[in-house]
Image (cartoon, rainbow, N blue to C red; front, side, top):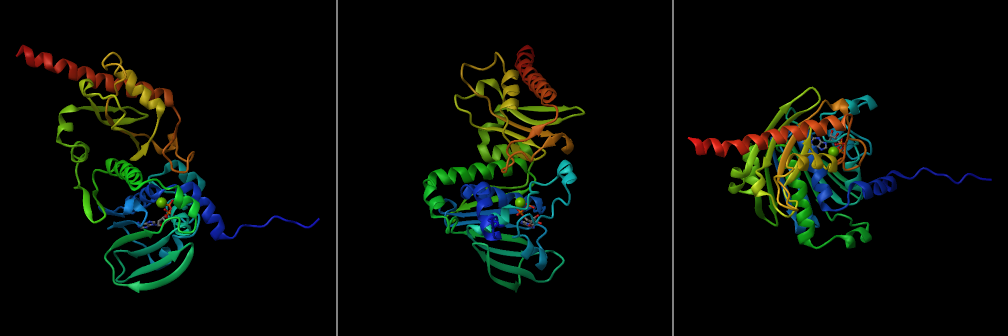
Length: 339
Ligand code: ADP
Ligand code: MG
């Protein structure tokens, strides 16, 4: 019998991988913003047109890429962030799979401009559906700009599956907020259809929360701080009387990465035991730092779920830290009263 197995051509493999990495314009937003953060940018602009259906562009002032890297970054499994499997246990970057740009370039029209600080001239590349259309030397500012147009141009089924602009824009803003909340020390701006939606200067965590969610938020914040061998926690939770019926502003960041965790959410809720009205939810903005070798980020392509070595200890520490903070806050009004 003759053999029938064949290796898929790269552009087909990329298109398949893209299905996992890129669900909607917001996925592109996430990947490009994270790359800009990994490139140590201090100023990042996100430009959106038609809820990302026509354009998602990210401009950063980060490290930029050499002409060779500018070409290589679109290859699958091409990454500057890890070299060997062991590096996965000491990660300090958002990316490491080397799949995002190859995937995005497989299903959209991408225009990239990049220049590292030490080079006088930069590189301008256009790639469409994994096909290099042009490559030029260009006079460019330091840093990198990725413009992603016509997402899913070659996968009509995916394109038709996109939701209304309002829904897609909501997804984009959610992803944007997750990244900007994780990095208050970076200046971020977001423009949609030509108007400025967010302009967030470099700040601390409290200022960033207030800049995003409004001045009234400030008075509802209770600081949380705890340092142990396995985790250091900082951030804020809301005073119980500000809790709401809906789950709104609830953020966990682990080593500067937004994550979802039903288990840690439960720990927070346990700390509020007896303090919340029925069915009400607190707001929280919690930043956990753990040694990178004690977590596994590689369990989900979008990396929003991670696995902790010692979940139970983390739960207990988080719960007691929040309980302690809420307790201190409860005492404070009484002291005021006595004075
Ligand atoms: P990953 O982030 O997992 O490494 P990507 O496909 O997102 O994979 O990016 C591939 C590589 O391209 C990165 O490892 C990095 O070296 C380079 N790169 C991507 N975006 C930028 C950027 N904004 N500035 C500088 N280098 C970048
Ligand atoms: Mg990346």
